[in-house]
Length: 131
Ligand code: ZN
Image 1 (cartoon, protein in one colour):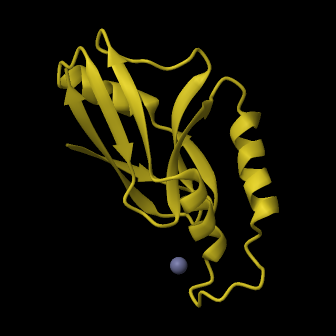
Image 2 (cartoon, rainbow, N blue to C red):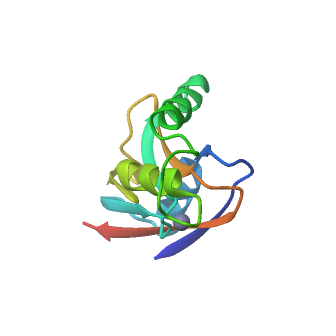
């Protein structure tokens, strides 16, 4: 397993971590397999979406904010319920196929770390099942 540190700089943010995941696969010399990308946080998530147009992650974050505003009639005393809801909806992990030593992603796809309650230091774990 590999741990990646991610520094976030905004309350909500999507950070492309594809290169760091691909680097680990290259270092481990994995040719074929499945790669799990997982974040152990309750107010963050991992997702795959478009990286070509930077407005796509901005729109995703804006749509999530509209659906789950930071201030609403939440019970959780910490005051970050919207971030917890977004984390559960987007999900803590993604699985990606590895073929010929490369992540199998679509032309426009990237793996994003999603911050929903930043800024903070975050962790992402990568684990590979080879074969
Ligand atoms: Zn909380």
